[in-house]
Length: 181
Image 1 (cartoon, helix red, strand yellow):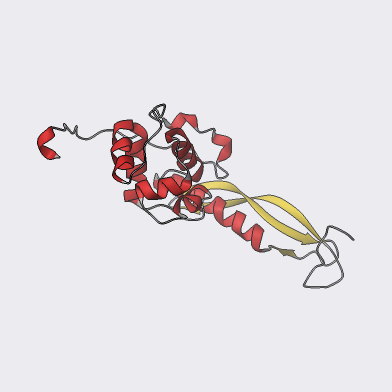
Image 2 (tube, rainbow, N blue to C red):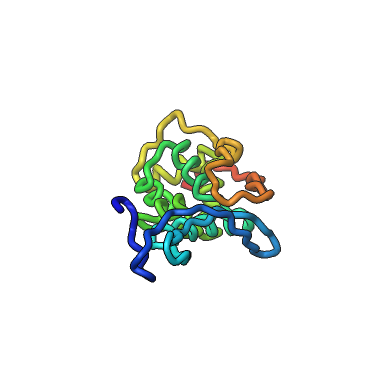
């Protein structure tokens, strides 16, 4: 059969990709996330290849980010795009390494709490973002505007739970004066 993988367990049947719903629990929060796997049409074994395992891991990481109150990958991407910068530029502005934003946005890893706060601050204050960008020699686009969490469509997040991203609430106001420079 062309286009189907031979079952590595029985060697007789072919694998058919399946998607199912998997009930997961994390810190007392329960959600159904999409699970990817294959089923052999001969022996009935269920198995997952590397790509399916990666997709399953990403769904779980996205769910954990939501429960922990972190920005999801879709939200990080929406903020970065709203700021008008590439992943490489985001890494220069915020730190984290050359491929950090690709990993955050794909939900391969969870950004640190400090990184999450820095991204949220830059999203809510274009002036703060401009200061950070200028420190690394980037000239931000003039049309960058403040981002709000409702700009990300919820269907982009694979793991859906009742928790929403908490908006950034300023705890203090910074007043810049020329003597600080």
